[in-house]
Length: 368
Image (cartoon, rainbow, N blue to C red):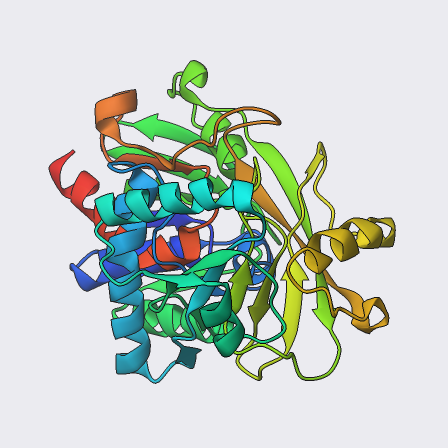
């Protein structure tokens, strides 16, 4: 039997950020991670973009936490010397019938507190990005990219410097609610039971599975996660772009867009493929779909330069043809169990929002 003050399940970027925030407020924190290392799933299989909060409904968790999280993330990267670039992003209206959608984006972004968006016409876009074809565009100067792995390693270092620990190869197999908190059964080389006063379920793709292992939790409160798999193609050579290039968003994602890594190499993705099981196999038959989508705004694409990069899977609370869902942060006020927070559907802009989500969870636990 081991006793700690707080357990965070999941060592992705959300779990690490949350554990750090709790550790900095004086809690003894242990992070339990099922895999052999930190951030091996959604946290390391994304576009590494620092978003500005343009698309999300005003007042939503995504809008508020993205806006607050962006400022926190830029500040953290400066303080910790983590590599990032504030490149800016162009959101394109490729045809005249998309201009109205772009105008809606601008109005929504202003409601969300963004004051720096710039409307550009075709010629202005061409001056900035000669390879881009569009009718008009929105420029978001505050959008950027970050070294996600370095960010997570730094979060782990902060946790450990505050007396906490990140323990990998420690899957959680059962959680009993006790009078003074929780009894967490952990498997690995051998089974352990850890008692804790506070518990945060930040297991990402497996958050509903971890929640289902809590014996006293009303199972009807556990949402169904849908899995949206996305493929990314790498553009060989130096990309002919200086900014991130986004088309109008699709029904379940932000469209097949162009992002840049810190070395300037381009990658396109993700698409959306609804899957029932979790695997990261690459389906190269989807390349034609990518080529068609990319050539709408980058007609000079040489498809022979597109090579397989990687895939990622997003935990969604909505399915095909359903409206986009918000982050779901369930605390004692929702499920009635003191000291417990479950995090569901933390997809994009989860990376950008991580430090703000961490503050939110800390506040919920301090009052609940």
